[in-house]
Picture 1 (cartoon, rainbow, N blue to C red):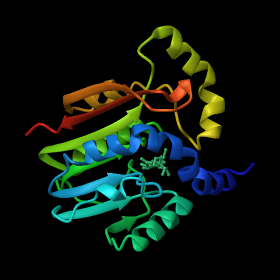
Picture 2 (picture 1 turned 135 degrees about the vertical axis):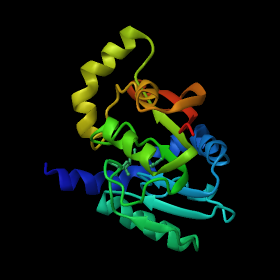
Picture 3 (picture 1 turned 180 degrees about the vertical axis):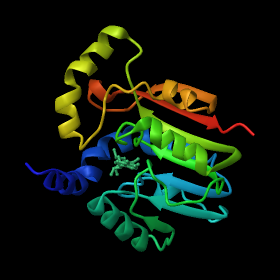
Picture 4 (picture 1 turned 120 degrees about the vertical axis):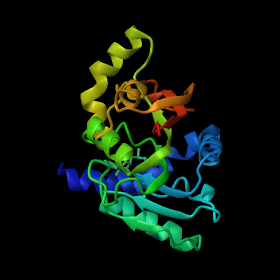
Length: 210
Ligand SMILES: C[S@@+](CC[C@H](N)C(=O)[O-])C[C@H]1O[C@@H](n2cnc3c(N)ncnc32)[C@H](O)[C@@H]1O
């Protein structure tokens, strides 16, 4: 099947596929994470707008980037229905159309698993953040248990097709540190009601040092 067709199916089914996980606690965890956002805020891979309930009027600005046309279309529809009008740009995290040091907070929820080039994306997030700015992340990651991680490695290829480019076995916290962030908060958790291959989850805050 052509990847454009998979992208459309993924976008059309995303909210329904995630609804049980959202109700079982993901939605609440999103709220807790976004409570830490301040100033000029950038969300990468905003998808269909799953974080929109937690966008706040007291932020200086909000910019959403989303590279998938079908996801961006649903995002715009959801924002319009909620009466929200942040800037939506169709772009990937590897090449952000934003100036250096122009953002105080970056939000990434379930995105760093999917970006094509994780290191390039993290370097871009660091570039656009002001010194002292923060990356707020909620990501499913590589299992800390080596036996379970080997299962993720085995299932990586089929899962990547099913998940529209999602990598189930990324050691994302290590990559964030490697990109020059200081991790201030790191909680290990489970993505509720998710298949075991994507169940290990981290939430946290990473600082771009001044
Ligand atoms: C699993 S969905 C998560 C959507 C949303 N952030 C959420 O929390 O529900 C992954 C999202 O990342 C987007 N994405 C894929 N490649 C990307 C890239 N290179 N840069 C930014 N976002 C990307 C996808 O289009 C999709 O909307």
